[in-house]
Image (cartoon, rainbow over all chains, first blue to last red; front, side, top):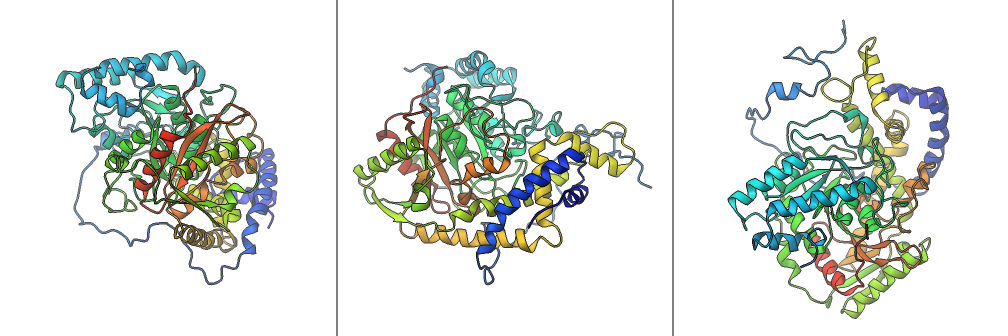
Length: 94
Length: 487
């Protein structure tokens, strides 16, 4: 499979990245080479193979539903670019 | 007594408990070594000198505590691990001013064990890279030769330990990021089995591949650090509740390799190895045989598919993990955005570096509608076959051995232009992460041509770290010593 500059631009939009025209062209060429290399996997017949998403075969771990307060709101907000002292502030949405 | 900063963690721990040296003396010696070498090596993104000195003073006031396995020992951790109140940048501009409100579990366990944290180690941005040139701040140099790279992505951790700035460091390994810098810097590096060490507080790259592990100047040191950080943690559901053996005690059980079968995967020894790497690794295997080990040829036939499989899964998981950087709760936010979407897009584009953006794009692509089956689903299927390949090989032997990397450390700038070429350097290390097995890099001497360290990789069964450490320690005592860089 090959990837066109238009597809790179589309994927960049999905990934919330703003790439310059130059970068789009450069990535398209590089990703083309990388995807070409990845197409090697199609040589293998995996029709009957169960996919493996993690090395640890364990089901979801359950715990008691208990309220815990580990962190103070003021400490969490210290890392935020903009707050009103109680909430995260973002540009107007509606 | 060797010079203080050249001692191993195990040696300095004993000296501290015997009161031959004080925690303040050890800490000051490490800080002086950092002062003298850091302008050349540049291993550290931040230094917590005053805090370390204050902590050392407090420890000395209360006196040595033998129940604390790392009492008074100065260590460094990779900047991908959350440290409460201390900058945690992941080598990225997007987290330039980030100070976590909690410690990663591995960091908290080091602190509980009495360790002194000196600073945070440089790394490729978000652990994406094999040279540490991809840090958004500066490149770390290899202390053996400042014109060469230290490996990556835990290159800062590798360089700081090899230079003698500290007694051990934590690195993280998604596709070889502990083992490669350990190999290039001539130290011991251990990537534990997936699920052995809690990932809580480690900024995620590939969540099904990432593990935290020790980087040290001796095998015993690695056992001591692993002992502290291993074990169940309710804050990481993938950290398995399997008992942690006494790794340090296990080391004294073996003085030779009688009864051990070492598998030599043909695919790791056959082709493409630099002659000096093949020679040093083969000599180590001959030493193992002389010590009673039996060697058998094994096959890992799917090795040729490992890089493609790995890079699909790793970038897919990365694109998902890095979606959390949106300029809302922490991290960089663009100035004067037009609206919410514009804020997301500009904050991310300004904050992430080139390789990170490339991998996000690739990851988003392989997960996107129409390509998911051909890439991500397919790679997950091949991943199971690769694991089965390892299980079959490890049913014929106790550990697998081969080189960590086809070459010794390369020159600065040599690998930066072609991303695919850089991905290929991980050829021997990534399968271990796909299969979730423990892997270790042990220094086995200097390359005849480059004079740079060569690492032998040992891979074991899941949760078989004790067997790896035992084998590595017997070899460590019998192969020609790699020594340390003169800097």
